Structures are given as structure tokens and as C-alpha cells.
Image (cartoon, rainbow, N blue to C red):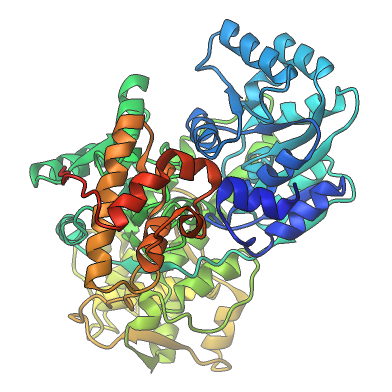
Amino acid sequence: MDKYKVLKEYFGYDGFRSGQEELIEGILKGQDVLGIMPTGAGKSICYQVPALLMPGITIVISPLISLMKDQVRALNEVGVHAAYINSSLTEAQIGKAMQLARRGQYKIIYVAPERLLSSLFQDFLNHADISMVTVDEAHCISQWGQDFRPSYLNIVRMIAGMRSRPVVSAFTATATEEVENDILCVLGLQNPRVLVTGFDRENLYFEVRSSRQKDGEILKYIKEHGKESGIVYCATRKNVETVCMMLLREGIPAVRYHAGLSPEERKENQDLFIFDERPVMVATNAFGMGIDKSNVRYVIHYNMPQSMENYYQEAGRAGRDGERAECILFYSPQDVRINQFLLEEKEFREEMTAEEMDAVRERDAQRLKWMTFYGTTKDCLRGYILNYFGEKTKRRCENCSNCLNEYTEEDVTEICRDVLNCIREAGRGYGAGTIAAALHGSKNERIRSYGLDRLGTFGCRAETPEYRLKEIIGELTAREILRSSDDKYAVLSLTKEAQRILDGEAAVVMKFSKAAEKKVPVPKKKQISGDLDNRGWQLFEKLRELRMQIARTEKVPPYIVFTDKTLVDMCLKKPKDRKEMLSVSGVGAAKYEKYGERFLRCINGKAVPQSNTY
């Protein structure tokens, strides 16, 4: 059997996506590989297909129990025997799994990094035929990555101690050039084939909102999206509790997830979300890594994350099936202060030196600045994200709020000179809010106590609203004309570029929304694949109901049965027999034997599932 037959027979796909075949070819030739591919690009196919073609066992190191269970469950559904080894199993169960693996029962075994150096697993490695070691979420091995896990360093020791070195493959969705180089170096990949397919997720719509009615807007949005599945991320446990209670009071089936809950409740809530029993998850960033739920149609950030890496990883949990999804960030300056506090409270590993801790603090502060600029930029949001990860893009994507909004350009050079003069005249450092208040001529106690009401620039911009002055100061900081300190109370100072403006050598043009009352831009609606007609959508709903019935009976998530994308393809092709059903994307031989006949009967009007409601 070749790679194409494996892809069709087990996974039900007729062809590979961009980058998959190149990485698979490298692995089958015995070459180490590093694949940096966006969420939803099919990274798992890149190691699962060659794992089925190689003679021995493939070990997959994965950071989370939920991810392993999801992947193993999905593999078993398509007829691939797989197992996992982690703390959810007893030693007896682990021993049994490894015994079966040595007998050839399993081709793929998922392992938690904490188990790699255990005597039981080491004994298994010494007696088993290991063809490949795959490192999933490979950015976890880099201390410069956003999810560094010291246990990932066990991988290096494990490989070094093996009788013969297997092929090593590594995959991640988010990695800057620095993290990429760190992965290559720490893992010791030998003459690797490195493939970066690009970070763009064309199916995702990006939007930033600044609103004082955040709760109301989120509630309205979720109600408008009915039964669709979505995630609301919050920075703190308190916000998770508040938002979840708000949704529940309005009759929205939501669940919560944060580190303050018991492991049992976290697992129960996660399962309710994954199984589509409760379609809305409200969570801190403790939730989501490795969750392979394909039909998340929106990700809302109630608070701004600490870095672009975190944001893109969390937002990327939307639309994993390749269908349209929306990522909305609610930005507030208060979020910056919350994140600064959280970073100050960050705990470091005991073995880290003072120099290493200082370097991490500096890197964290710089990441927070870039994230803050994302919340205030008027340029293309997709372009901003991709540029951050080192990918050049066209000027407009036409699928983000900034590209769809209407802006006017204004020459604000004179206002900027006043801002710069005020900062210089004030002498000691002040923050953006204080400088804006002084320029506007605020008479509050704080300004008087600082003596800023005696400045020559005090009140010189009384006609300019304070929010606009803060907006301009934020843009000057993003352009590195102003420098903002990294401490808790960020203060402003001038850079060399500021002097050029003061000397009249440079002009400043900025974009502003045409009207403050302008409605939120409506993204171009691209219906789920194929633009189904009314009858098509009616059939789609029937197939969804049948899928839910099967999922509840089989006790698996609905998307493990078939994804939304596969159901849509069924509605478009309307297969009449086994051969035609196997031509549907995502329907392989094993899944047809399990579910195919029931879906054929439903499509051809021979079985109509009962309606299910939340």
C-alpha cells in the first residue's frame, strides 16, 4: 500500500494538502523533518500516514492527555490501532499497552513527555522496533516559546539513549524564527527537511473591538450564532465565572474551564463542550491546547492575551475544518495592566539563572507590546499577524475589521509635536493617560498634584478629545517614535525618531474611523463549503441530527463520526451507494463500515432522525 492508498483507505481523502506530501516523502526516505503549519492544515496526517507505511512503531510525544485521547479515538475510528500512555492510566494498564505494542497490536503510541524516562518505558524502547519519534507541539521544547515545558527536554535524552536512532519529526503551528531555530538545535534534528507552509488561515475573519458595552455585545453575538460552537477566552478566573453566569442566565448552554475547578469538573465541562452538549466554552488559557474540535465557529477574547503567539494559537482553534469562522478580540487598555500584573507574578523554574530570568522578562514585555499594538492598529489585522511571524503579505486582506471598516487619513504632525513637547517638558516620565489629560487641559486633582497644569503645553489641545490624544500616543508608540517602559506603570520617553518630528523633518499621517458611531463592519459572509441551497441545508440538519444520535450512542464527539465539512460534501454529492459514499471527502473504508449505510438511508429519504434540542 502506498501513501495515496493509505490516505484514501483510512482517512477518506483523495489528495494531500499543501506541504503534507513533501514532509511525508522526507520521512519515508529516512529524513528528519520540521513542519511549521497553521492549525487546521493537517499536521497529524504528516506523521500518521508514514507511520502506517513504516515497519515499526511510531512514538508521538504530546503535551496533554485530552489531545492524546482525541487523536487515539479518531485513529481507532478510521481503523488504525493506536494507544496512549499517560497519568490517566494505571501502571498495569501501561504495561499491558506496551506488551500489546511489542506484539504488533499498535502502530502509533502517544506518550506524555513525563513518561519518557520511566524504567517501564525505557524497557519498552529497548525491546521494541521504533521507526519514528514524532514531537507534537514542538514549540514546547523552546524556552523562547509561549508554552515552554521542561519535561520536553526528556525527548532529547530519550532519543540519545535508544539502541538505534529513529527518524525524528517535529510539528508546530506557531513559531517565530527564533523558536524554529531553537527547535532544530535542542532536538538535534539531522539534515532536516524544514517546511513552513505559511501561517495564514484564510477561512478566519479577524476583528478588534473597543467597547464599553462588552458584555452586551458578546451576549448579542452569541445569541445571533444560535447553536454554533464557540469559545470565549478570559484573562482571569473571576471573568470566566462572571461571563459564564451571564450566558447561563440568558439561557445559553455554556460551561466554564479554569485552573480553580476540580479536575473532575474540568473534564466534565470539556466533554460537554467537545460532545456539543454545551456549545459555548468560557475559559482561561488553561483550556484548548490540543483540543481537536473541528466545528468551532468563533473564538472571542474577552481580554487581550499576553502575546501574539498566544492569541494566534487560541484564535486558531476556530475553523479547524477549513470552513469560515470568526475571531474577535475585545481590546481595553485595562487588559495591558492586567497582563503586566500577571507577568510580574509569573513563576520561574528553580534551575533558571538570574540572567535567563531577566531575558525571559524582557521577552515577555516585548511580546505584550506587540500584542497591544495589534489591539490599536488601523492596518490590516491579518497582515499584522503574519508580519509578526515573519511572513510578508499584501496590504489588504479584505477579511478583517480594519480592511472592511472605513477610515480617513489625517495629517496629525502638529498634534504629535505638542505630544512630544509635553512629554519632554514634563521632565519625569508619565503614562499616556496623564499626558493626554494634560494636553487636553484636564483640571483633575492628579494633574494639579503633579504640577502639570503649569506646563506651557497644558491645555494646548483642548479641542482634541482625550481618547483621540491617547489613540495618537498609542500609534506613536507602535511606530517606535515614543518608547513605553516595561514596568507596571508604563511611562513614555522620546526616541531619536521623535526629534525628526520636532525639527520639522518628518510628517505624521494616521488613520481614524470616519465616524465614532459607525457600526461594526460586517464580514463578507461566505457560506459553509458549496453554498448549499435550502434543500441542501435541510438535509445538512438531518445529517447533523443523525450524527448526534450516533455520537451519543457511541460515546464519541460528533466530529469524530464525521466533520461538518464531510456532511456538507454528502449534501452536495448525494451519494446513492457505497462507491459514491466513498467518494465523499472524509469517508474512508472503516468509517463507511461503521456509519455509511445509516447516512445513505438518511440522504435517500429512507430514514429521518428524530430532532434533538439542547
